[in-house]
Length: 238
Image (tube, rainbow, N blue to C red; front, side, top):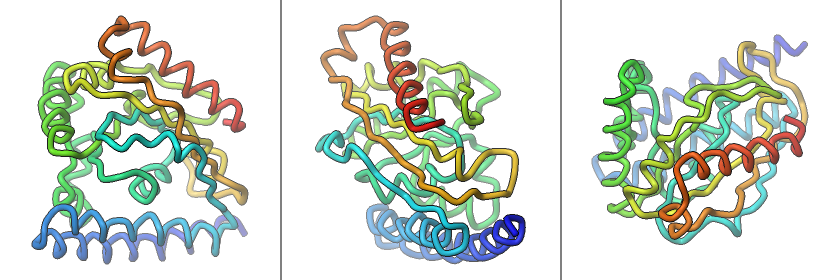
């Protein structure tokens, strides 16, 4: 039964993704902000399908911690879910993502229309340079930046190596860091098409102020972010 649910979900969601990507590309004619609003449909529709087909509900906690100025969001990466849902929760932002995603027909073009920052992960030095320069430009333009510090998805109960790019960017842009934890991997795990009924909770954590970002040592900040995200993931059962 779960396989049938999963195939039905992916079948409908794939069609929705293509349609919304095309709408985003066309909306880009009227500006990036308008295309961003159209892109919200991806997460809204995806979560509706998850509920209707797979019995998965979504709960958002900590909205009061969303700052009213551009910042750097450091987000746990367990699933595809957080990528689709974050635009429906956070103010205008851009993602840091691997450039290979840009090569996907239609979907990649939609990402390009939204102004994402695509990095070459095969060269750590070049990737860090891109994150710092392009990320700072986005923040100065009034948009936040979302980074997955682990770089790739991790299974429930596991964590990847947290990379310092989030620290470098926040220091250079002189802005705050907002950690985000969630348990999406419980319902939408990596490595399988199966979806499990339940509730995905996304928890926005208290920000690390711009002053603390500047005054604290890089390794201390990274350890603080890692502990904050991972401890809350454990609290959420992931």
